[in-house]
Image (tube, rainbow, N blue to C red; front, side, top):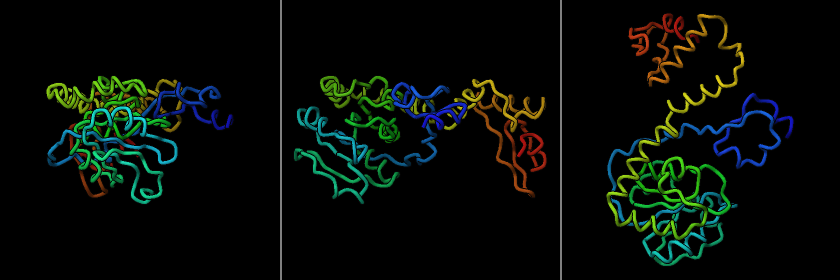
Length: 277
């Protein structure tokens, strides 16, 4: 394990490095860098009628628990609630949850169908016990227009106003009630989350962060450092990523494509001269 932690120049994680048990054994930099999750999701093409109901996700079928949220937040508030427990193949093999009659237990569906189910809800709670990941659930809530309360890093990144400490049931109940009864507050949180999605897990934002991490190492990389011309091209590429522009895809051998950076139509040969294989 010690040898493994010395192989890389930098180690990337989806959670804050201070949460990692192995960090104390690693002498190299450990940085948080999320995955470009948004490219996996189609933008919902239609609106689903929202109901004043809560949604919860049980993250890990082996270690995570949501019973404490059911007992201390859901039961006292008595709002209709959907609990997504696990994909269908494991659904009937899990220990049963102690659920009141107004809570519906459902298997998690494939990605696009799951987003449609989420769109029917108004408030999510993301405070699993025994879970240490980032949490795509809070991100999926933002995509579906669900305001998500909780203690995960994803809630802190995407819904900062709705972040609570783990098991802070009183604050969670206050936020649920405010989101259910105050339309202006609810809409403000959804609007803010949509903006933060691009910043936190958008493709361009993550390319920018990755380039910053590479450059922060201050090392020579042979594959991109073959002379002044190539270094200048790399700088130009980085500059345009910062500005939000990207080179066009490489044209086919017989084809051509308009390039927004050079602002001209390129053949494959011209594209290779500019950007290299």
